[in-house]
Length: 79
Image (cartoon, rainbow, N blue to C red; front, side, top):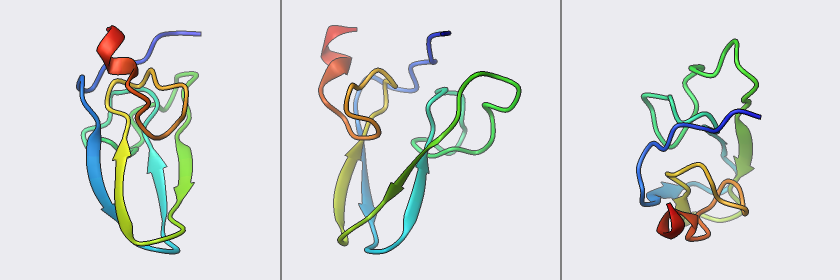
């Protein structure tokens, strides 16, 4: 599997809305980070769906190396 592009070496804090679905970019090429804009088309990457259970802040992974997709697990600290 190809390595994703590191979009940034910190998480993206996003206010999510309860019941709404979000599609996290896995390739790192999206111009709408941390979310998918279709830039992965033609590659092995596919976005990961995240459905907000509550309205709150979520820290989405920016480095694309988290082991807890789509949220940050601190993996950017090892890059």
